[in-house]
Amino acid sequence: FLKKIIVFVASGAGADSAKISLKKFKVDFVCLPFMQQEVWDAFLSLMDFSFVRGEDSFSRCCLFGNPFIWNIYPQEEEFHIVKLNAFLQKIKIPQIEKFSFLYNRNFKASCCPESLEILEEKKLPSELEKINSEMKTEILSLLKNYESLKPEFKKFSNEILKNGNLAENLLNFLETKIPR
Image (tube, rainbow, N blue to C red; front, top):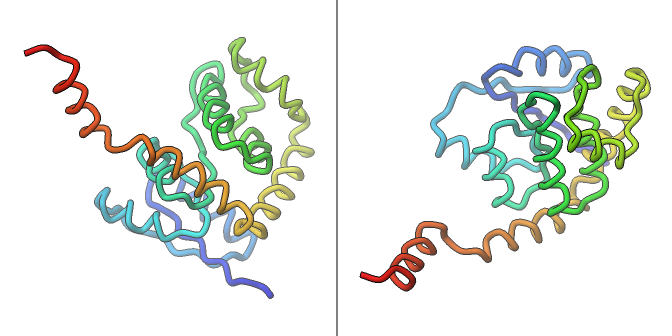
């Protein structure tokens, strides 16, 4: 069975490059207008698989329990790799980890010591052609097998939700721990 894939491209900085890439691969896509955050969140919750960029969308995806890739905002000296690694250590899905490091690495940048340690540990390739080929293989595998990733993402989401509501927890703390 071949499942029809429709890619929804959000408005913003990456939209033009996404459209160019999707046309090359002859994938159907729909360009979305800007949406209010609540509408975007509801829309995002319905996706089978997402590529998200901002921290708001990242945090929502963590709660939804659907498979996603976080395209983290690059930082100086690739310090974003440290944040990415922290997330990947929590979710513990090898296929997501491998693709995420390839996808988020700026292979032209020198790295801060923390990022370099993480990247050396992951033994990422250094030749761009090899990287592109490996990324293509990895993403096709992820998209073909996204259903098998759902239980781990759902487990991760449930672990987060067990923490409860931040506002309620804060109020409870203030009421019980702070003398009046």
